[in-house]
Image 1 (cartoon, rainbow, N blue to C red):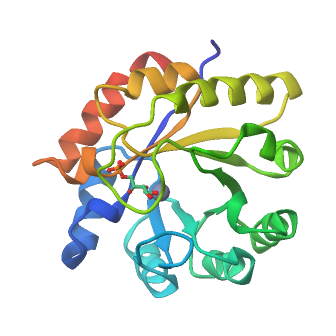
Image 2: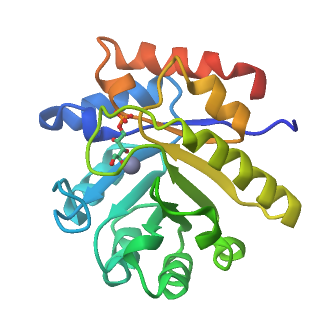
Length: 224
Ligand code: DX5
Ligand code: ZN
């Protein structure tokens, strides 16, 4: 397998929301590459988290690129707003958007990288037409809505098949994986072809989040 850049992307969902700036500083210093922010609307997913003002505030306290994972209905109405708020990556669920191409183009026109996300039950085939327009694909390895869930093992084969599809078509599309990733399975997900590794509870649920980032990075060192 060719050398790829592996980024550890801590998800702030499991962080202490009363001291986010400090929590982010710890993972940034430990070598995290991307900051994953889960935006939930209580409609597309059964949970509510944060929105535009928080992304705006966080973009002032970190140099890490903010990756806004939009788990919201009608994401086309807000996607470009997240770029204006400071997100450098914005991803949209294919299940939530009847006009995905338009939304993806609005993210790129606003100046950020655009991602398409698929849920565990959504087939890879649903990415067929959008693949050449996106900068990354996010494969959900849990059903979105909550941190701390168990990794669904069929996601591994999905990542493998997507890697094959991307390489076959010669596209510069990166693969992100999100949900239930920890020290026990990170090597498998990287081996399958994932490059942006989201981890929430494995990092912010640990006593030392910085140490957890370092351990996850070290576990993937042969691919870096
Ligand atoms: C789940 C979110 C994830 C979540 C991951 O809906 O999209 O980003 O924070 O948390 P862990 O790593 O604990 O599964
Ligand atoms: Zn996420």
